[in-house]
Image (cartoon, rainbow, N blue to C red; front, side, top):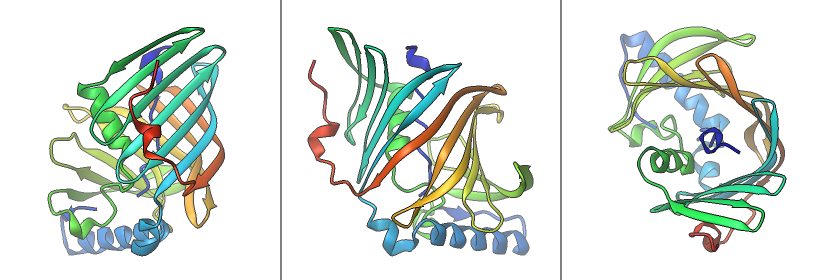
Amino acid sequence: MRRGFIILYFLSCFGAAVVAQGVGDEFTIRQLLQKYTETYGGLREANRLASISIEGVQIQRGVEFGFQLRKKRPSSIRYQLERGDTTITSIYNGNQAWLQTKQGSESTTEELSGASLETLKREARFESPLYRHLEKPENTIRLEGREQVGGNYAFVLRVAEPQSLPSLYYLHPENAQILRIDRLNAEGRVSLQILYRDYREVSGYPFAYEVETRMDGETISLTRLEKVLVNPGLLSFYFEKPDK
């Protein structure tokens, strides 16, 4: 297993000050964000989503791995990839992060920092910058236009958060589900592209059962969900530094 291809894809499904180019744009953005909030459970129901357990398979450059993803409010995540006698686990408890690699009887654990830590922090969030936008004036959202994604002409929102590079969110024109996210680099080019397909409801919440991650136009991972549990009651120790 190559560490660089551990893709912490978790659907950023759960906001931000609106920066609009005109009255029409501002109205469109507010409509989209309102629909987005409704689609992902509304203010009350989304707060009831306290933990998630997901299992499935992930294909990286033709090689298939089993994966498990666990998340717990407010900001804990555990992500595990398995193939044969090798297991790689990434953990974030809201403050610290670790990467554990097991191969046969050998095991190593290292603390993560820098970009790896920031990635886990972002993936551990339950609420995306599109959610509760009026409560987050430090963020900005701008309408970029419309672009075809699959069979839909998605609305494209440019989202900027403090101390982070901007991202482009592509939202379904009817239900505002996320169809694609483009992560931009410092030059404004797309560094990572994530596509979300096959949405299904689990306990009233939408989950994309297929997620494709691309880099430089090449698919680096394809994730398919097989089992999703909402509020399984995960314990906090599950997200602490793993024993060897």
